[in-house]
Length: 265
Length: 327
Image 1 (cartoon, rainbow over the protein chains, first blue to last red):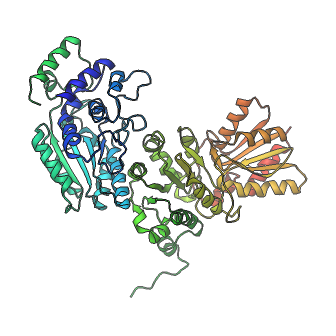
Image 2 (cartoon, rainbow over the protein chains, first blue to last red; image 1 turned 60 degrees about the vertical axis):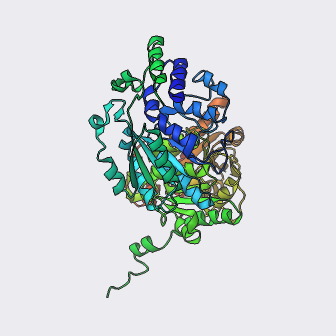
């Protein structure tokens, strides 16, 4: 609830933003940052921390409130979201925002970035886990599959990809733009262990990610396909895929906030 | 039973041995490892072409074979740099600078990560492999990327020196190197400083400014012209960015004319960089930019190409002489 409400508040400052991308990924952010990942509150550069990278960088607006809540940077920064000179923009920037483990914006690089982190972690004997969230539309980028091939070949068992399978991209339904199914068979064929989960069921999602993180016996990277709903939590966004990028009028924002507050999560 | 291939066979050499001059790359990295730096090297199915096979054999735990996935390699190197590594990744300059331009910009330069990119077989040194393998735009592309330092060592010893100097250098670096067959200009142990030109000869009529594989033939041409009683200077502009502006201005103050020599399009490379300094400072000196004249290079054995484009010592001498005799 906190992530969704803050997203609405921040986008109000910017007057445009990616609500629905955040809403599909909100439970994953919550599971990772409040339960699964090894982190130290107030210490964003702790070398032993687990890493999180976002291929779908435009959902950063939903991650910033979490990082501020973990004391990685002052909460007051949020009020300046996208203003002139603000460290916080539409995409995560590691040079400007403490707690962002890697910048993104160009689609398709993040799994390769995570692969490099996992390789360096292994070389240094540092057992952190690298989580890479990928958009399902992002699966259309060739570089994702270069990285998938390489990660399996190099047996990067501390690399975990999470596909936010919300079914939509900018131009419409993923299956209509360029279909990526059968997605699980593709990842398996590339040498990954694959799991399916309801990306909005916080307890299931958390349990699965905790189990994968703790599994020292796995010899391959793991991919979690999280079935999600783009715009989850606000019914008119859930049923209208055109909300990839948008802006809520104050009246619609009130309706959205009421709806989100009426839910359990 | 199959007869083993003869040592003289091209295939035998190609598959099992390294281009001797490119061993400098491995040897340079080894000196950093021995000095305690967390070097992590990577190559994209070209470890025999760039000589990293030697490093891989000596330090397998520090080497990653990426296969033919150059963009993945460049982005992964960025990830390595955030997790305590000092990555050096290598592939043909044409693929590194052009295919991976966006990964270099976003993952490395924008994020200011100290990744070392080795673009080897630069310029037209791949000869008959064809235009796809020629890198005549890489300097222009890399030079326009903020935060990125661009270096073109003239030979193996200067490459080793530049690699050693990079150990404590905070910015990302693009190294533009040849194919390991460049004649030596420098002795082993030569000093190197980023952003500092090396002034070999001083001249009043013309100063030649060259970089990378063009330093040796340009120096040879300048010496011949001086022997013929012309007064010709010669500068090795080993760092293209940041350019040694002072060296350019000193040459412009001393010589009537300047001439740049590069194995690159005359647009946007060394000649462009020198022209920018002259224009910025209002220097009225004439500049002749010698290189590939905004065209795609032909297919031929490398030595034939260098002769065709007047980028060997004879050609550079002829072009410089033409300029000297022109009012």
